[in-house]
Image 1: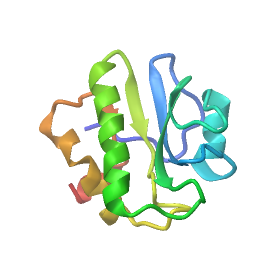
Image 2: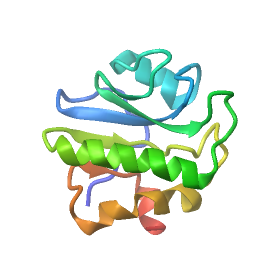
Image 3: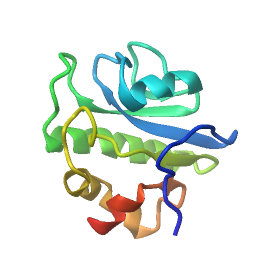
Image 4: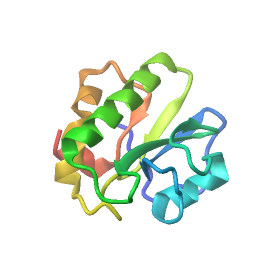
Length: 130
């Protein structure tokens, strides 16, 4: 089984860094700031360059409830499904500045366990909770 590396320093041409974003698209800290080097665009989230931002905070930078994050995860999984040419490396979204724990966020990715999303790579810790 493959896991997202703990500290991603470079990406292969077919890899996409998946990070926790906010709905305002302000990438000022954490993994979102790191994503700027791979094509994330300020004031946007979603698929940009070799990145995909999944909002875990709202436009006012308040943490989103898990049901709202689930909607954004579902959008991401739809994108991953239609782009099998990419390998999506999911970071521990929501587990830094948003304040959630892997046990809270990991179940949002339970669809990955179905085998349909072979191109979605999750952090090792997430696998304990899905």
